[in-house]
Image 1 (spheres, rainbow, N blue to C red):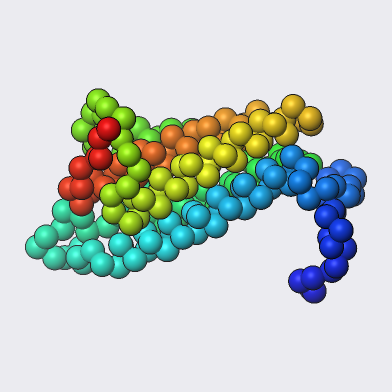
Image 2 (image 1 turned 180 degrees about the vertical axis):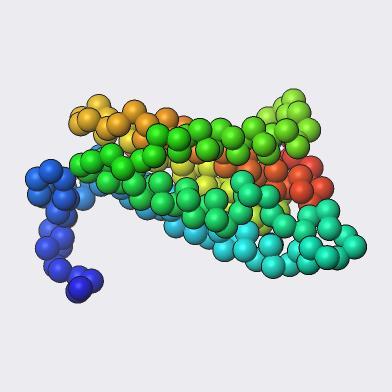
Length: 192
């Protein structure tokens, strides 16, 4: 497969839906695709950072096994599942929904599990902390943008409600994950 086709050199691109469309590259649909693609890339970086953190942790048979294994909800495997769902959202915008009905529920379970281990949040907090938590905050902000763009697209064409719902919950997930990742290494929230 050739990477460059030169067909987009004049500011349009082909989109495959139930019919093949040629859209301007600044079309809301393409803006939405771009935001989701950027988010997926940021999650890929977060996933790499999580894998690095996991490899630096003590082995399970070690005396100090407080943080021996990353919890299931902030693991590389969980992030990979999120990436796959985001890819499916792209298909849903184009043509056919392929998102599992329990995708949002899985995020809610993750949020609840992490929040149960966190101190109550009583103030606004600034993004930051450890590198991995900071990347989770970046994922949160890019998710919010992706959510805004998909809402715009939903005003122009049929977008399954689960797509908007999933992105809304995903930004909440990344907020809690950032706090949780900081908390695991005793890095306090940066309160405003």
